[in-house]
View 1: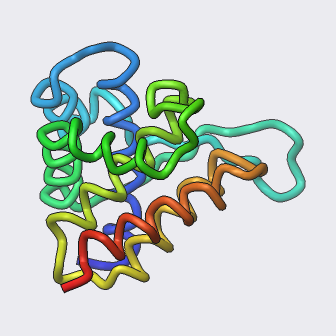
View 2: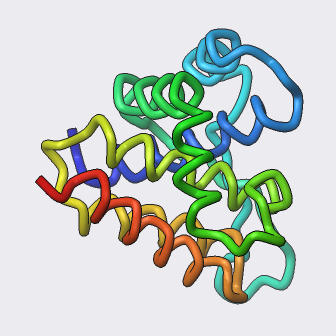
Length: 157
């Protein structure tokens, strides 16, 4: 499996978690729809020399990694949200985070929990890149900080 496929799997997992978060659809149905091509598999991009966004197909992603991130993030959502909340101010609980940020953090922490074969640095970097794809402000820095703290707690052994 190429690095590109793994990156696409992480992005697709964030998209799937977003779909679950905003629609309340079950993870099994969303995973099935992503794997069949009914949902996801696209990104918006401003191409060089153009001023408008275009839909760009994501191409092939690694289905097993995608599904495992989504399943782990939904299965362990309460404990993952507790990790996120512990690193936010008292006035800013996890449910006040914008949905995309929440989904990026959930996916990143889920992968930190189950995917011990991938280095912490790689996982955090991948999810920071995803945050940069959606945000130009402080959100990528917040994703970096929370994932870094979570990684130290989850992988300290």
